[in-house]
Length: 265
View 1 (cartoon, rainbow, N blue to C red):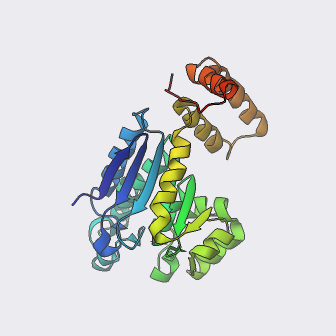
View 2: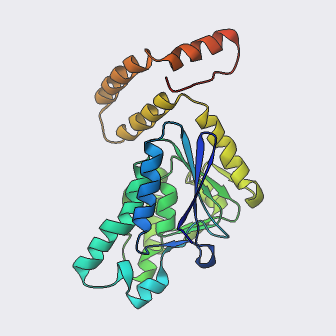
View 3: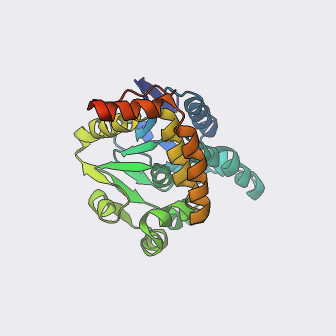
């Protein structure tokens, strides 16, 4: 059974982490390569305008493979330099692949998203949660530190104080608390989750593909640039967008009071 089940519907690709019998853990040999291959293919395909990430079965992802940690095998075995390389070359490869997606990413969090699983969800541009979802960064409870970049991304989403509370206590919060804290934008029933995620993805995918990718890049760059730099980047990018057929299609659709059909030209 492959780690990722990849399905395509029109301009939306869905990535489903597919180890339901063990709550979709990550860290096995080849996991990084699987995510990298999937995300590279998406980035090269202008026909893909949005991605949905979810988990098979009752969990989104329980995080790192606890059994492998206990047995000190695979990514979690060997000498300290070897373990460091295992993180860099495998687990971090998963994270870098998702972070490097050029199209918007929606996490449809269907169940527990714990540790690395929570970090995966946090890399999404938008997060929807089932009412059965739970979120936790429980690394310290296992005697390890947050090793997946969560200390960088989580405070940017929910603020320093709440992120610190989760990291330093190992507490797990429910979907409603995640909504209250701004970790997710919507909570729906489990049965409705994928329908809601797909409806949102379809709205995103209706946008012009070049402008969509550039808009995501500008948001990403805005985290670390000055306002003046952001304005300069916007001016240069906007000049390119004004010369596209999709720009003219958007204007014509507005004037003709109809839905625009963007083709990526």
